[in-house]
Length: 100
Image (cartoon, rainbow, N blue to C red; front, side, top):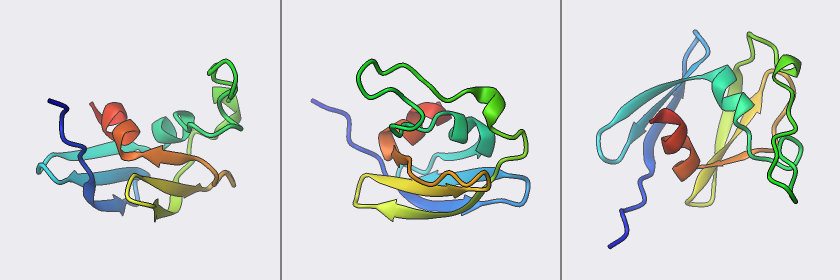
């Protein structure tokens, strides 16, 4: 039997650049913005053919933060980052994996 897919009930952007996620199962995570930005799964950050990460960590400012976010369907969220990046869709599965 497959594990149930968990979704956030709340996502909050904090002034210290953390992103808070409250999950349906009651778990609460606080994710550093830069860690999430470096994990961006989009085609600009990951080679679509090889799956190799192409985003260079030194290109992401230490103080990067999420400026806003919007849900994408029932499966993920898209963040607008202070470095101008805004195309990555973070599935809820990916967010949970990063948090764990």
